[in-house]
Image 1 (cartoon, helix red, strand yellow):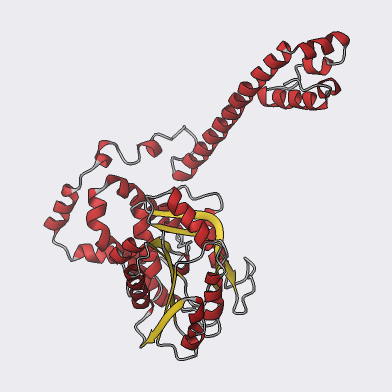
Image 2 (cartoon, rainbow, N blue to C red):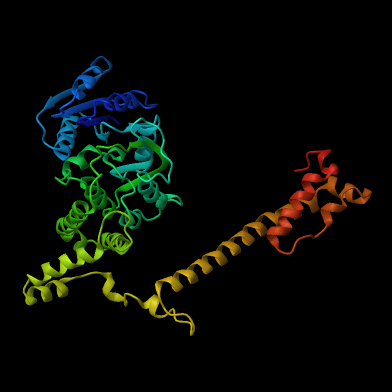
Length: 406
């Protein structure tokens, strides 16, 4: 596996040295470090050139925008024979195990094309920011969606772009070339990640692997309107770009549905009502005959059952049938299942342990002499508690400590 770290540089003379040093300090070294200065007006390129002796390759050119710079760097990495690429924005930093952890997950899950991890937020001076700091709160809030694991990547990504930045993208070079970053100001990473999640190609390392820097010139520091408009546009582009794949692949539609359902509670700047208003305007421009043909051309296993049969059948004569009450019932069933599983596991351990005690000649001698009475008690109300009491009795038994009876 050959890994390239690519660094799009723009007006970050103050930070880019730290970014490059964080790559050089990796436990798994990068095979290539490439940087392009995108027309910086400060000394960024000079700082980067200072690392040439340590293997960093770089050049500068007139400004073409972040997405073009990243795509150009990916093509450069591909030409140099690197099959994996990690992007690093010139004001962010990797933590030492970034490449090692991402490479390990790539090897463990060879079907995945894009890998990400958790992050920390730092300020302009490089100090960690508190989770409740005003400019850090969103990032930690979005990341908290993954605190209990990432069982459904599309669903969580619909709630927020918890990956948060292109610096958190470790991906196969071929996939990046086939899915280039688009000319958005804020959301080129979100478009890329959503598509990968819908295709089930995005995996998450449950470890903090990078530091995202918040400072006065971050692109995301803006009034709400530009970001809200771009989020609407980005999702229209997503629907347009993936329409054929979604229609043809029922498994992808499940993931697409999970993502779309979560969008209504999105923590980023997606405005669901405005987006559906845009969809309504698009539908208004299409002849009714075309709308009918679209509806009746749909195919898939979804037509075999009513879409809300579980919800509709959940009415118990008291609580209203809605997702909230159904979720509460599901939680209760999960709790009950966990209880039964725990009791089953306890019986599976308790019975052999009792059998072992009964068959032990040493224990039999101890019981005859009155030194092992605690091992014959049947304490506890259920199998879990009985197992716990018997373990404690065995651990405390002076008679058992005299000999290795097991």
